[in-house]
Amino acid sequence: MTLLIYKNRIRDRRYHAYLSKLLICFCFICGIILAAQANNQPKIINKPIQFGKTRISLTRQYRCKHYKLCTKSIKIVPRMIVLHWTAEPTLQQAYQTLYPATLSGRSDIEKASTLNVSAHYLVARNGVIYKLMPDNWMARHVIGLNYLAIGIENVGGTGGHQNLTPAQVNANVYLIRMLKHKYPSIKYLIGHSEYRQFRNTPLWKETDPDYITSKIDPGPKFMHQVRKRVKCLDLLSRYQSNS
Image 1 (tube, rainbow, N blue to C red):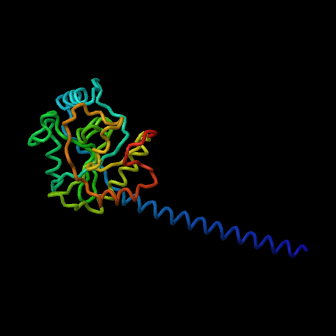
Image 2 (tube, rainbow, N blue to C red):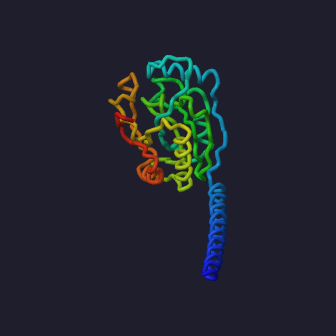
Image 3 (cartoon, helix red, strand yellow):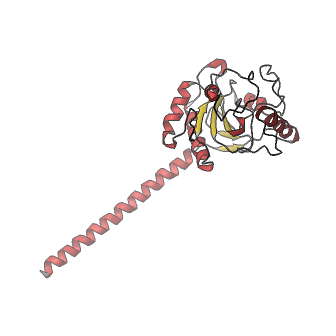
């Protein structure tokens, strides 16, 4: 009986030693995987656009005129992320378009305001992310919804071609996850081409019924690829009254 107990103890010790080694190996492998993921995370580089007194003043005027939000603050409570493409082939061209405080060369929207278009983030074709402005300040990037939407521009889409890259898909997925974690208030994810479906919902605040444009960016292929990878976040593409 004593011998049997001794053998069982030896067996238990060996088993626990085996489990300990297995756990160490598991932790080591997890460490390698996490390190690799960290190295593969898209870079976020601060690259501010002009956002001084002129742009702030124009943003206040826009909010008051188009949304009846006549406040000194230009802060937003993000409830939506809108994905775009720049329709310009290079990062530098896109940045130069967004950089100035005032609009130029946009006869389709300049009557509504001289406030320049902008976005919170700009994603290069290699997946590098550039932060252009605070993501809780209002940017002009989506009619009727700017007051609650964070905008992500992606370099590409020149001539309407759906040519955004896998690196940009990865970067957008990373940004969406990060922003949802930062702002639990975010409930919606849409492409710019989908914004009109929010007309006649409580989220739509545009006061000018004639101020509307047609958009095709960033393309159904890109949106499908991104949505597939952030499905677990349960972000909506259409208005729901309980959201």
